Amino acid sequence: MNIHFSEEDERFRREIAKWLADNLSGEFAKLRGRGGPGDEHAFLEERRAWERKLGAAGWTCVGWPEAYGGRGLSLNQQVIYYEEYARAGGPGRVRHIGEGLIGPTLIAFGSEAQKRRFLPGIVRGEELWCQGYSEPNAGSDLANVQTKAERVGDEWVITGQKVWTSLAAWSDWCFALCRTDPEARPKHRGISYLLVPMRQEAIEIRPIVQMTGDSEFSEVFMNGARTAAENIVGEENGGWAVAMGTLAFERGASTLGQQMLFQNELDEVIGAARANGAARHPVVRQRLADAWIGLRIQRYHALRTLSHAEAAELGREAMITKLYWATWHRNLGKLAMDVLGARSLVTDGEPYDLSRLQRLFLFSRSDTIYAGSNEIQRNIIAERALGLPREPRPAPAA
Image (cartoon, rainbow, N blue to C red):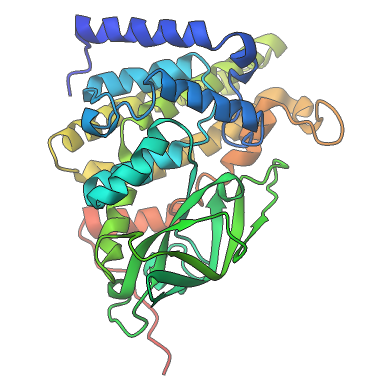
């Protein structure tokens, strides 16, 4: 990929940078840098209002086709958008699951009626979504989902449990994988992809408190939850292909925005090291340099991967992405605590007022676990990228 931007791209950069500078002010000034990982509860209602402001100005879903309410931006301009948003300190997006996952999935797999019903609310920043994939016994083994959905008249009736469901307590809708044919073999053939309204009595949401003190994700219990028959994406028992399509959309241009957030965190760690003298220690100085180099590697690797995606192919290189950034980010959290020294052990206030770097450390411990643990990522690389023999699987119970 050509990493040099055209003059048209640079004009676009100036446009979005100016809009952000002008609008992250007044009532929204306090949102700068807030609402990211480990800080999801911060200014929730204000961030929802910010989403509506973005939607009204046409700054949501920028990579979507114009026919569906997006801007149809080129890949280069999408990269610029996410970089400038992070550079400006734009707050954590409470509707990124709608914009980044279910929206593109509906564009690719949904019916015209589903597109008309759901896409405008995502573009306007009005409806929030969560993802109902993981279950107590179906995390890394996603095909083992046990939540059942049965067709009853013109509705699906759903019973089961989801877990680690991000934003569940705040969401209006959930896209859930449900088993609609318990006898199908192999297991992934009996799964359907359903759109489920979250605000109904048959759904119980139990927030899970994290080390950071927040509860960004939850357990979700569906005890006869209902959704209309037409809220199935793709064919009945054909949800696996749709689910894999959704996961593919996680590798979009927003990864460059994530790296700009990482740059902001690294800059804060470097600033702390300079302020307290830790930067004079040769080992700390080398670790800071290694972190800077690692972030540059992430950027160039992401640009290479995105160039494959723009050519409608996804190279083997994409398979190392999550393992690399998760390990790098976890190490950054550890470096931040080592830079702060004894100060890292003291909170800013009662009862549990963590600093941003303390939140970074605690939250980044999960990076190498969620969305596929490091162990699972290494298996994927070994088996799918390198063609090594599959890891032995336990024999089924007699």
